[in-house]
Image (cartoon, rainbow, N blue to C red; front, side, top):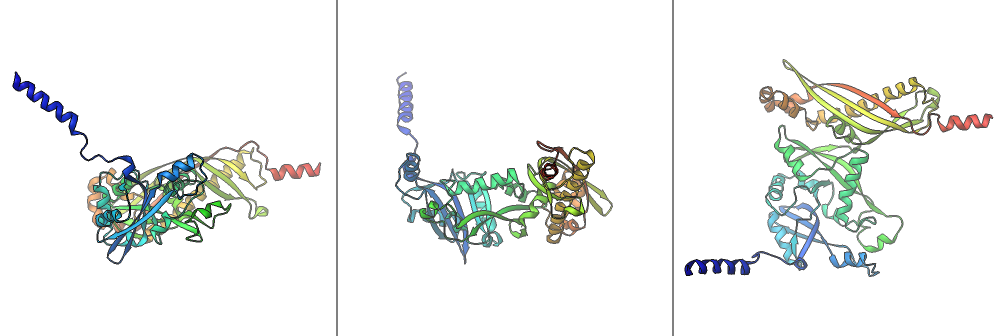
Length: 407
């Protein structure tokens, strides 16, 4: 009985005194919101955007004391872990990556033969979020983290929201999270994309708080092109305006804007604007001997947001003509993108994946020669475009104005 009581007492003492052996107080952590990776010679250069909690608290409390909301540290090393550990040489706080929202990669890093090492590191570290956004830049990655945004306290949050807004409102590019990027690379035929962020205007002008006092910013972050990856290496670039064609085929269009010219020859240069509210895409591969074709069925619904044309929108013939033009413009956007990726032999459309899902045995025969077979695919586009609403009026304002002048 006594022995049993001693055991229970010992267990209670362990529970009370054990605590968390690896606990760290909050005021000892440096919250990293954004990370940038560059390559110089044989070394990795890693930059960290660390939140200054005193500055954020002062801003929320209405203090007029000017302090930068973030601090940028840069370290280097022969491998990523060595570079990241070297932050201790400069920072008084332990780096905390659980809130890291964006990873900016330079083009040089993405084209490097050691890019797979970076992916390996970020997949292994349990503290790093798999949902952080990946973005590319053609210049130095650190400079992207240095740009202060007047609309957001934390610059990394601004990058995240720029991509979120563009994805939801324009569908030119889409956000790419780390887990999605890696999943694409691990799914044959192993092609993926990462969007670019760039500095439009004067680089280096948005690094200090004085720039935020101006009503016009000399340098702003802006979405650029789209990087195409073949395996764990950047293979080339797709222009930003070609991104909408990519998103149509991959069923990623949430909302976008389509401009179509007026039908009348006397209205040359005038346009109508259609807001696409809903879009859906189905891919169906058709294998006939050595011939591969891909049926792409697209449904698009939208409404007229603006028009410079004089046609009466209450007439069914006018809407039918606009539907036809909308169909043609979507087709044009897709074919333009298709011609680019064909030349690159990069299956970012996911055609190989569609064949794999439908006919795994046939895909096993094709996978080793897919890079050469992909450009020869016959693309069959079936587009069903429909305009559901014309807004608050069926009469163009120019027509109404002309009639009022005529009395």
